[in-house]
Image (cartoon, rainbow, N blue to C red; front, side, top):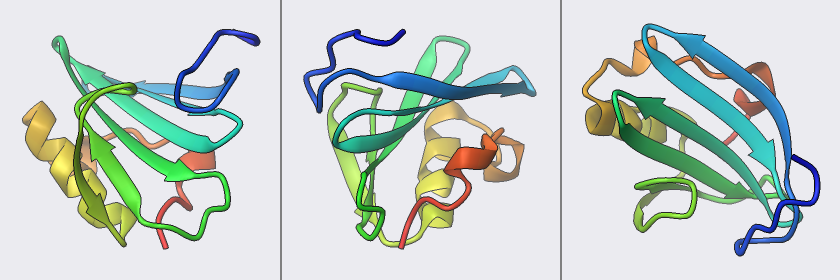
Length: 103
């Protein structure tokens, strides 16, 4: 997927995709952001953080979607994602490169 335009920060590279419990999680990095997107039964949610890594994480409706809330902690963001997808946050498959998101 190298070279695909991304209006939130240039080209992207997909690093990891993981699937579990009917949920697909995709971790990608753009020039400006780290993105963790989730999809389940047509519902989506995304967690975004700037590339510097020391910032709040934003929960969006989708990768390029509306920002819903910002959190200091990754776990709090995953709670919100779980609510959007109708699953327990413990059921969300988090790819290893995304495990250190949050402050």
